[in-house]
Image (tube, rainbow, N blue to C red):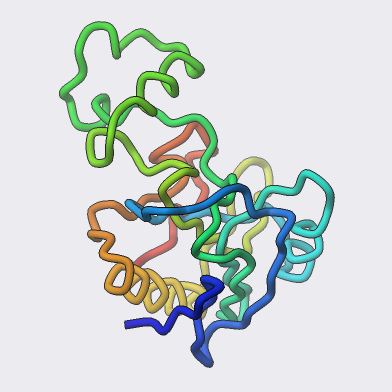
Length: 188
């Protein structure tokens, strides 16, 4: 179990507290899922720097190439890391005819009226983890062994501490219309 302080930051030698308040948006009152991403950039430093820019988006955690875990946002705050949700019922073969009609904006609105696990976790109720990894010609580089070891530890600890079932941990393209290769080699 993780020790989370009153500000929503993990107190553990494996996690470096690196606040980036510009990426925090509103209260995160319930965590129903964890979403795993890749940055699209080649270094952790570039991601950490981009998280300071006006209107920046980011995730709660960033895992660098050497496996270092940075916590960039409080676990009491939302970050905008998911985007418009896909209909979970499609992947689970349980959609109504209305839900099969493809329109990303309408699909997201329908999904957000549902609760997890009828929908995927969203910005409002998930923790985001970014893994440093560049995309070349629309294909993300492989997640390395150090990154996967840190990801496995972090996901297990967050799952246990926050009560998130492992069935509610997803790659970004599973829940939103993103590059299918993003985090495809991530393992937890």
